View 1: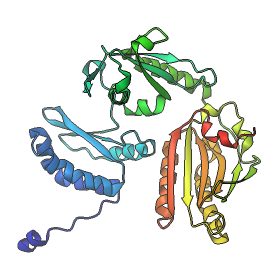
View 2 (view 1 turned 90 degrees about the vertical axis):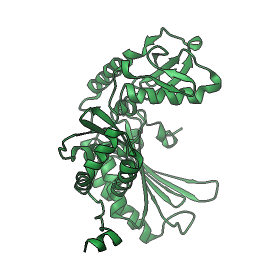
View 3 (view 1 turned 60 degrees about the vertical axis):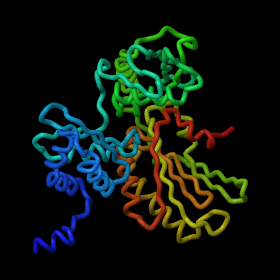
View 4 (view 1 turned 90 degrees about the horizontal axis):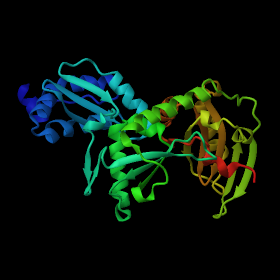
Length: 362
């Protein structure tokens, strides 16, 4: 029997759940631990085995690892800034069992400014080279808009410097803070600065203050869309196809849009039979999928139905949300429930719903 096992190998169970993943990890963790501790053959003995198992579970999981101390390996799991995968990384780490010699972290954590120095493309990004100041945006007062100033800024290397600054921020303030608190970043040199410069080490406190102010301003703010009247908009595209949108125009004029800063878009693709429009059977299927999303994303819980657009072999359904975690799970599950349908979804921050300006009356 042992000869057969060596010849044909042992069939490995597929990774379908968090528990499946951690069971597999526990069965192999000693070899992983040795590879990281000895810093020897890490790619072959750890990464090349870990990556496919994470991919079996779900696309979009990344990782970092290293020794936390002489006897503990830290494995950081990250969506690498992808908002819609954050909740799944958090759930995976939450499901991790206690394994001696290991600590598991969801998302890249903030690091003390003294320990953050990035040398990239000939530029150093650290507390000595970077400073910042906030920008006041009159029409969008709730947006956190900042200018980062690099003392050695060169316009010819703007792209490289900007990329380095984002990596620096990812480490300094932490991944979750970077993707959830800052709305806009502009990168300039000291000669272009229009305000007094603030040391970069004070950025974290500034963001905490702004976020606290934002939460207090909009805490408990909800909107009822159950009785809303939706306007039907029709247009003809340049290719001759039809566009039909059903939009809650009243809510687009709401003065508390920023209380629901996360936009979730569900896209369902189909084979349009007439000018990009679905036939009756497909139309009913589109409504069924949309209704499943609406049943779980209710306005009373902080998920506002903005409306939908049907055109060019695609239906898009729009939500404005207080939080991004539940929409991520609901919309991802729809892709599993309808595997034969091409369903895509996206979640992004847009505090003033500028994505929907095209639906506003002129």
